[in-house]
Amino acid sequence: MTRAASTPSAPERRGVAAYRSTPSGAVGRAVTRTLSDDPLGGAVRRTVLPSGLRVLTETIPAMRSVSFGIWVSVGSRDETGPQSGAAHFLEHLLFKGTHRRAALEISSAIEAVGGETNAFTTKEYTCYYARVLDEDLPLAIDVMCDLVADSVLTPDDVEIERGVILEEIAMHDDEPGDEVHDLFARAVYGEHPLGRLISGTEQTVTPMTRRQIQSFYRRHYTPPRIVIAAAGNLDHASVVTMVRQALRGTPLDTDPATPAPHRAATPAVRTRPATTLVTPKETEQAHVVLGCTGIDWHDDRRFALGVLNNILGGGMSSRLFQEIREQRGLAYSVYSYASQHADSGLFGIYAGCAPGRVNEVLDLIRAELTRVAVDGLTEAEVARGKGMSKGSFVLGLEDSGSRMSRLAKGELLYGDLLPVDALLARVDAVTVDDVNTLATELLSRSLSLAVVGPFGESDFTA
Image (cartoon, rainbow, N blue to C red; front, side):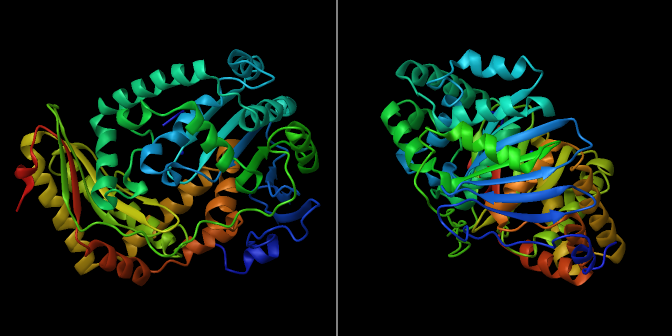
């Protein structure tokens, strides 16, 4: 509903360096493995239940909180055109009530103990999560498993949430700084599901029926496609027991199965030729994203990409921020970003500026990208970019929610879970040549442009 210096051998000395997630060895019984006992984290364990559902936990005794998440390997890219928005619609509806609890009981149960619940939908997965005191973890598991496994989806609730989602879509249309990123995805992916809005549109959400949503729910929300992750002051065996009890007798209490395979990395998504898309709006600022295809989740160059992104537009010391904001004062906000999927990715540069300055800003961005692609980056820049990557990663592990997310994403997206030291070592191993080679390949590609502001497409033709 919301729209987040080790040597390579060090991890082997300190814990399990990595694992490759595979189906459980024996269908019909739970299989548990210890994945890591990292000094910068806690003991990480993984259990595959007979149903194919996976439970991963990280035990951190020093914390007094626990974050508990249920992650489903389904997102907006799994929808057909007429279904666009179904995954997001369903995410809203699961909080509206189950056979055991009304909507108010779901929210009040967690809030009564000072906890919080929420959910979000992406293009490749959906997450439902709660954060509570460690002593209230049994309550969080029972409530969250109940709403994901056994939601009622009444006709009245479907109509109520339809109105809420249409308001959410309208609100998004009033935020051009957000809208331009969706327009950029459409510029690159066209009519492919990755180019569609996660929320769907008024044209797809309005006619969507309860029967269609119910069918989507039961087809995609199956144990082999679900990962449960928890991090904080917890005991793994107890979490597994509580999950099994909470799911007993629900539609997720199914016959033995093996976990679903990861999304295939090949063949790569076909993208459209570089294009320019403009959404005319009488805004005070022009919002632009200039960019191209990037790399996918599985590409080992993602560590070099992170460094490159930091150098180009990842902070106040980045090239684009210094050139466009600090030295010329042409924009308040300018940054680069990378998004990745199982079989594709995007790399883009965003800027918000006065409409009369948009061409100047775009010229400066193009010039900087060409400069980096041709001349490369320096040792000092790469060292700074690596430091930013390592620092942001470690600092991001200061709360149980980010640790819970790391477990689930490792299982769902990457198929492995590297200990903290191993991840830092991968960043340390990135060389200047690695970054420059990737920059030359990436930044020499034809660039697509998305613009939201007081313009027409003819304003950006060569």
